[in-house]
Image (cartoon, rainbow, N blue to C red; front, side, top):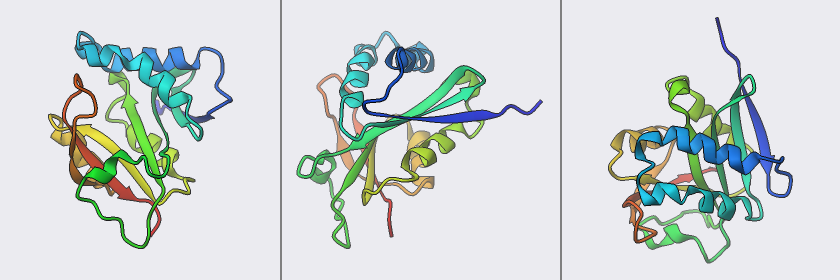
Length: 175
């Protein structure tokens, strides 16, 4: 039987009731083996932070009524692009940045190509020049996946005292 995965788009100011709780539940399932880590336990704070940003967008994948994963992010304010401390030098006057904060798929739906579809749908109609994201440096296969999507590693950062060390990855959206 072929399953159809439906992608649904959401944005700042028009989130349905229970939406944030659904993201938190998908995260808890996706990171079930690492939920004893205090940084992972702070995910509800990140949901509130990102969903409250102007320009927040989210794409959720559904198998029927069951959420299988999501991708979300928001534009970064000019002058507040945290990735600029890396070695990356944008060319052609690129200035605007969309931060991809999360791309995750629940374990039972992994290896179906859902993360690729979520990421592509999230960035499909973005007007920003660049996309940026962070990848835990202890997950080289995830970094390789993002490289296959056109990102390049430009440096490393530890944005919070209790967070992992991350590879900073940047992708040009418009050639």
